[in-house]
Amino acid sequence: MLDLDYNNLVMGVEKRLDEIFADDLQIHSPQSAKLKLVKPPSLASLRKIIMSLEWEVTDNHLNDLLKELNRLQRAYIKDDQLQKLLRLLFFLGRYIRVYKSDTHPYVFNSLFRAYNGVIKITSGKYSNHQKTRIVNDEIKRYLSLKAYLKSKNKNISRRTLKRVNTLEKSRPSPIDSSSKQKPYPYKDASKILSTTLNNDFRELKKFIYLEIKKLRQDLQRILALIPKKT
Amino acid sequence: MAYVNIRNKEIQLKIVYYGPGQGGKTTNLLYINKNFSEKIKSQMINIDTYGDRTIFFDFFPFDLGQINGFDIKIQLYTVPGQSRYDATRKLVLNGVDGIVFVADMTASMRRKNILSLKNLHENLMTYNKNIFKIPLVFQFNKVDLSQKGYPILTPERLTDDLNRQLKRPWIIASALTGQNVAATLKTVITMTTANIKNNLN
Image (cartoon, rainbow over all chains, first blue to last red; front, top):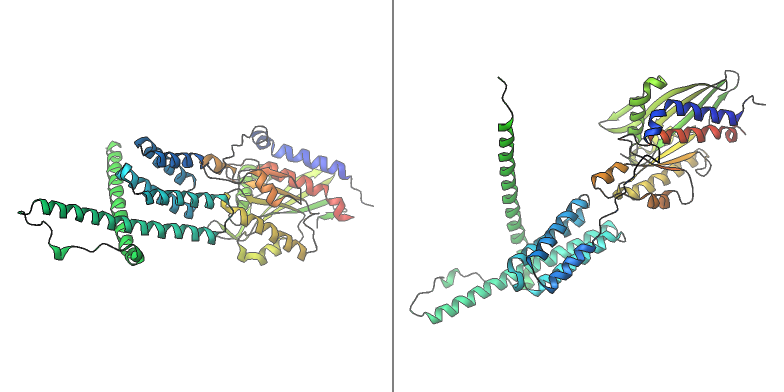
């Protein structure tokens, strides 16, 4: 038979471990450790803001929307797909900020659709592949909408010009008819995808350039504050 | 299986830290090495690493000293978490007495935790060991991420995913800050010591 008292051995081992890890076990005992568990941030306030925007477009609602989107972008920093949708919501928010009550109703539809996409992605019911599909669909719709709105704005400006011309017949037309661009038809939105992407890319480049410039200025300011060695 | 030498009065226990890649297994050992190496008079040995990734394994032997006339020696091992090193993981599990499953609390790591536990179950089966019988402790690591604002998996979710059937002790920890690293080790060593009797019988 083995000359081994198991119960005493276990107690002895436990006692020895307490001696070795004494300080650490006290510091990190479950009672002393305050565990602050952060659940994924709620989307309730985003929903509230979007609903309020549909009812009435005010500066407060728009500011709230952009703030909330910023908060969510920080909270879901690791979720690439969600980041894309949040950015899309951000663009739509900025558009509404410019056009306010004249915003085309399609923009609000798009806002709701993108919000629904956000809900779907955060629900945890979809696979990564499905999530990518949801986001890509939303981006395609957004680009189509963008193209449509662009063409619509051009049409409106041309109509206004025509009216002005008829009123002031003596004055020559400021725009040469040959240089007029044809509006992009809504159906051919996919054709102008590359153009729109190029424009977005250029905007992004400009933004990055400005940010780097600001950073450089900040750095220079900080460096100027550091006393030089004699 | 635990090595017990009655004539020399020596007991040797092998404990393996298992879990998904970059979950904090090596960080656990590094913390113990940094803070207790003087007390336990030992040093951790890194065997083949690439940057911060374990390619082969980490090995940390130490002595608890004489307890009830027996010299207790503990060997801590980690396995490489990356899926392509399955053969190494299997090799390290040979003769294991106790396991710490280091689960990553990061929200995006949910699937990898489950897959790693499944992998542990399969690898143990190759040595005719049963995951339901071997001393096992779950360490839900990286709780400190929540304070930095990152979404993390709740202990309830992790318990439901990993420990619903096994019903083993689980500890919320942060290997980086050292929170509950020692508590995890203490739990697994105590459980493994208590299991020696079952092993020998």
